Amino acid sequence: MELLLIVLVMVALVVGAVASTVRIVPQARRYNIERFGRYRITLQPGLNFVIPLVDRVNTKLDVRETVYSSNPRPVITEDNLVVNIDTVLYYQITDPRAAAYEVANYLQAIDQLTVTTLRNLIGSMDLEKTLTSRETINARLREVLDDATGKWGIRVNRVEIKAIDPPASIKEAMEKQMRAERDKRAAILHAEGKRASLILEAEGTRQRSILEAEGNQQARVLEAEGEATALERVFQAVHANDADAKVLAYKYLEMLPSLASHGNSFWVIPGELTEAMRTVTGAFSDNASSMRSAKVSENGDARRTPPVPSPRDAIEQAEHEAAKAVEAAHEEAARADRIIG
Image 1 (cartoon, helix red, strand yellow):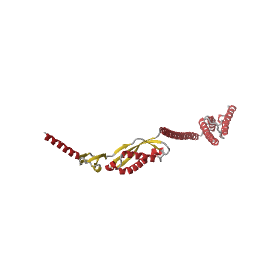
Image 2 (cartoon, rainbow, N blue to C red; image 1 turned 120 degrees about the horizontal axis):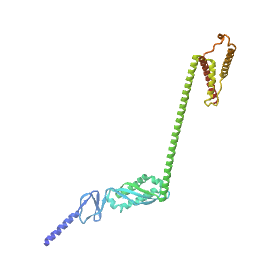
Image 3 (cartoon, helix red, strand yellow; image 1 turned 90 degrees about the horizontal axis):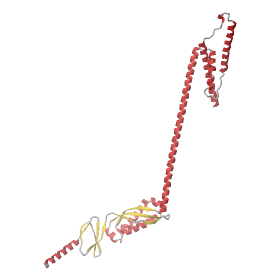
């Protein structure tokens, strides 16, 4: 029984010793091994063997790309304004030995180096330039950090500024400025829209006036052509029937009042008026003479009475003379309008 117990103890010791010689390293991990307190080797992922009680694991490092977000740090700009800046750092361990033995705490070292570099960069910029130069600041930070962390076995892949927080008073002033800019743009757009509306309205009024003037012109031309056609037909009818001068004189006198019936403030009496009056006067005097002759010689020979023209011929002749007088009156009126205009 005692022998069996001793055997079991020996087996347990052997199994423990064998187990302590085996080290299984996960993927994307690196183990730094020390032998008697001195760096010996970095174990790679997979199955590894060490000497028990002689070799020990000093540090276990993750070689994947890691994100580190720093706390807001106050930075003073060139125009003496304090802004709080947050940064995000993307780094990766490329040399586990250097990351473990070249620097005591690489995260703290990177954080302090980031703050120092930011203060140097932002100190040479004013607030407006700081807010609009994120890409420049990021590139400069990455350059400085990558150069400094190279000997620590760390590669800085990317540095981004997460936030830049100016003071509350500056935020309020910036909001007022942005509001004023928006109001200015709105006023400009409104003025441009009103200007375009007025231009379009003026163009429409101009086109309407032009069209109305053209329509009035065409209407007047058509009206004048109609009057000319009517007068031409009257003249043709009068010439064809050879109207009597007395009837034409009478028609001419009838047409004179119509010259003033269209609201004309100025009209000219043509020279033919005296001739027409003379014709009418002669006609009436001839009628009176004929009546007196008829009374004196009412017992005389009827064959000696002068022949009287037919009413139709007299009317046609009168219309002919009236048309000529009307035409002359129109010409005189047009001449007078040109002189007045």
